[in-house]
Image (cartoon, rainbow, N blue to C red; front, side, top):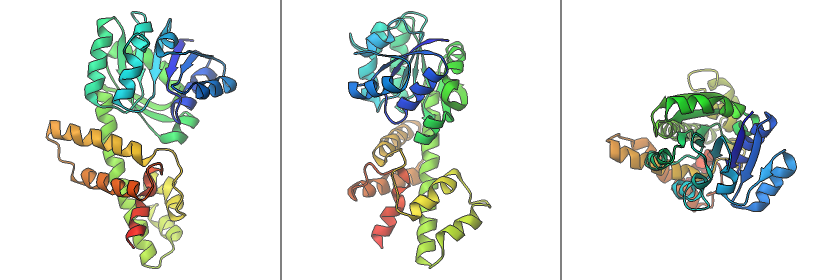
Length: 290
């Protein structure tokens, strides 16, 4: 079993760190809000540290799951940052969804002090984290990934290395691009059924068994019908992710017309007061339009 630091105890990080502890690893947690870390300690066997550097001291693996590029830099760098506490030969595993650019920047800085860096964003939402069945897409050195994969397995349904540093983040962008179009299509389908006077539940029961079926339809159609949007991944975070996708597309020359449009639809949802609603709330925008 490994000595592990886990940085960031949000809706994803809290259960992920819990799975590590349940699997017998020695876990030290850090969270910007100490109260959240105290709550985690009450539920799981482990320790709490006052800074990322203190949490990382002596750890074989440091796992992180925070908010954005700036959050990631803040927990990695400086005298209180994780890199200051990490020993040569240890591995930093970043589960945050961030830009490939910041991943490569931090991976280079880590390498300068003999630390390996694996970018490992996840998909599966809060439920996937709680149930330990996340999809984990990784980039980085093959040897570092091979060392980290058995640790990540504590909360992963599937874990794959997709290439060198940044490849995990680029794959997560593919994931978010696909989701954006799927959710908008589902929202339009359900909205159309409503306007046509059909039973949404009956329609979904039939079309979900054919080519239209998807995870989003199976897991969100009913709650979308009921105007319930409190299922984890918030619109604010989706817009952050889609912004990364669109910026990267500009750099690579990729064309993302649907993604750009859905990003603006999520902006409309924010204006409706839905910043913290989950991503299936695109249907609320359609209903508001009449």
